[in-house]
Image 1 (cartoon, one colour):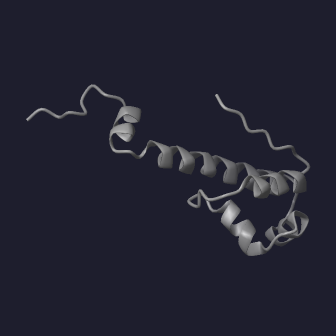
Image 2 (tube, one colour):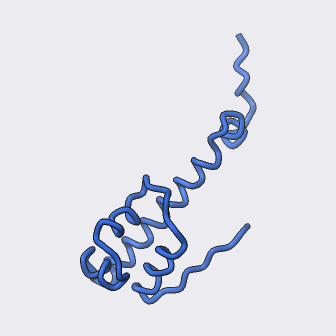
Length: 93
C-alpha cells in the first residue's frame, strides 16, 4: 500500500483535511496569550489588576489568556495592549 501523504508537507496535509485555518488560528492565539502573560509578568500585574486596567471581567481575561480559545476580538486585544502600555499591530504577510 502506498501512503498518499509521503512526499507532501504538513501544510498540504492540513489543506487536504481542511484543518489549516483552525490550526493556524490556534497557533496564533497561543502566541498572543503567551506574549500577554509575559508582559503581565514584566509589569508585575495580577489577573485581577489586568482585568481592571482593561475594563473587563476576570473571566473575559481568562478567555483571552486561554491558548485553546481562538475566539478573541480585536477590541479585546486592543484593550489588553493598551493596559500593558503597548500598541497592537496586525499585518498580513
